[in-house]
Amino acid sequence: MSDEFVQLATKEINEEILGMKNILNSCSDDAEVFQNSDKFQKHTHKIKGLAPMMGKNALGNLAAVLDDILKQIMAGKTPSGMFDVMNNLVEDLAQNMNNDSDLDSVIQKTKNLLNNL
Image (cartoon, rainbow, N blue to C red; front, side, top):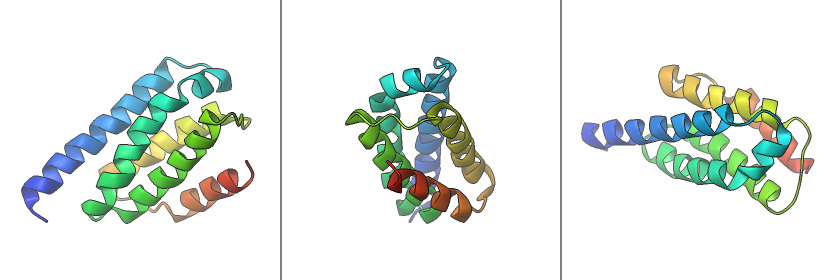
């Protein structure tokens, strides 16, 4: 993969994360997260595709699990505490882009949430 591709993908993923932050800034509770789940899902879908192509497999895995949760919400599930979950996960995505932080425990916790829907 070229340096140019990595730069472009990095820029796009950071824009997707910023988009998620902007949506969260307009939300104040779970209900508003549920109402915006389709908007969040468009961002996670793009991240889950781009991240592995640039070697950020953990980031892609976290985005994929979050994408699945958002699809469940779009189908009518309403897990309690999603406002806080989304705030934490968006921050985890941003931190991983900045410093390649370890996401294993976050991915596992997020998978557990998905499995309990």
